[in-house]
Image (cartoon, rainbow, N blue to C red; front, side, top):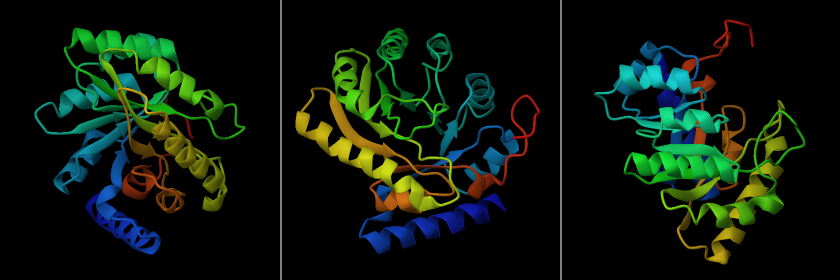
Length: 236
């Protein structure tokens, strides 16, 4: 079932890219495996997938250990607390959710201890929803300039989430805002900053995100099915 879902999803990505004049190979799919068991991840791996996104450090640690012998690109896509960075600093491929200089400093410090440079995205808050994290768009360039001074951290793009809505087009202003911000940052010519990635779009709005320039889309439900419980066993 998961293999078939991935196949259908890749087809939808290709169709959307054709419609808006983009190359499908420029859109990278991150399978959001949070709360799903290792067996589900194994099915996706067997279907040829290697990019997986997790929101919770403890859960990510357990899954990393389970697949330590496999080539997997782990993405941390949830809100990351500074005191949890040390647990993932050795192996995380991309952190999508940096929105604070102190967090950036901790990432750089822990990455230096691991003798690596950590790629990160800056999370942009583009809705009026207090439950979402991220730096305000007008403060993003200042933060990125500060992050660019850290020796073992590399800003590689931006991330955002659209509003809670059943209408995918309601996400378009958020995605367009971040795409425009990416262009603005590129004109700044900030040293050590490379705007390679725009991480935006989930199961309900990824096609709109692709139309607006997403290069990373974060998909869970369309691959693994509906989540019915969170880590505490409570209904979502």
